[in-house]
Structure formats: structure tokens, C-alpha cells
Amino acid sequence: MVKLDILSDPICPWCWIGKAGLDAALAETPDHPFSIEWHPFQLNPDMPAGGMDRRAYLEAKFGAATARARAYAPIVERAAEAGLALNLDRIATTPNTLDAHRLIHWAGIEGRQTAAVSALFRAYFTDGRDIGDHDVLADIADGIEMDAAMVRRLLDGDSDLENIRRRDAHSREMGVTGVPTFIVAQRHGVPGAQTKEMWVKVIGDIRAQIADEG
Image (tube, rainbow, N blue to C red):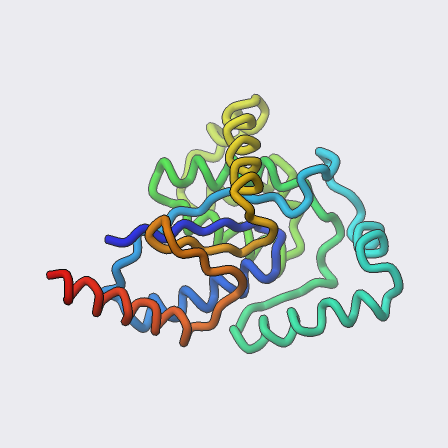
């Protein structure tokens, strides 16, 4: 197996789009060599714990409505091409994602990490749910067959808070400035939301290399 490390944030639309491209390639090549692990990277590490009003967040980040529309136009286009239900008008709160990353970490321990990532993207971008809210996160955990009561108890404490912060900081120290970032075999960095075709080519190249080495 070849390790594929993915740095992502569940409120990053390009991360969701990038995952869709990878998912399509993996579905097309079910005997792919990848062993996938998701890693935390907060787009807004200084976001207040309770998040902030989505409109206020966008105004602070982009300014005028026309600028916001221009910034999101390529995102809406690519999401539609990928068949993703992107309902930006449903999002009322831009959350702090530290606790969402804790859920992803715990899901990884149970072998449900990719399921957690997928559920968080859908909850935020399709359903407009506040994925910084503990009740919402516990409900998402329940939906992927985790123990919701246990997850809620963990969220109410400080389990793995420093672990997530440390891993996020380590990625920044290593030079990561944006997500998604894919790292193949712990050596080759692939930044951005890549297409299915690109991943199919990468998988083919890896297969060829493995065959040559064999």
C-alpha cells in the first residue's frame, strides 16, 4: 500500500471538491494502492469557539457582495461538475472546526475517518448545519455508527485538543499554506482540488512503478 495523507478542513469547499475528484478515481480503480489518512488544517485557526455569523465572515473576508460572488463562482461551477449539492444559502454560521477535527481523529481510530469527513462536508455544505455545535457533531457521529454519547462526552472535555492544534501547527511549519494538500508516499505533495483524471494517472504511474520494482 502507498500512504496518501490528506490535509483538509471540513468548511473548505475546495477540499470537498478535491475529495470528489479523488473518490471518482478510486471508484474507477478499485484496486488502487492508497491507504488514506486525513489530517487537520484549520482555515480559520483564530475563529472564536462559537464561530461567527456567515454574512459577517464573508463581508470581512471578501468585502462587497460582488467580490463574494466572483470568489465563489468557480467553486459553484466545479461543485456542480462534480455532482455535489452545494447549498451556500443554507449556511448561517462559519464555525470553528477544531471539534470537527477531533471527531475526524476519533473516527480514524474506529476505521471510519473517511465516512466522518464525508458526513461533515455534507452536513455543512448541503444541509447548512453548524458543525462546530457539539449536538450536531454527536448526531453526525451517530450517523456513521459511532457511539454518539461517548463522542458528546469527549467533546465536552479537552481530549485531543492539543493533539489537533499541534498537528495543525506542524503542517504550517512544514510550509503548508492552504488546503486541500495531498501527500503521496510521504514524499510528493499535490496541492489543490485535482481532477479524477489526474488521480487516475497518478494511480497508473504508481502501479507501473510497483510493477517495475517487482
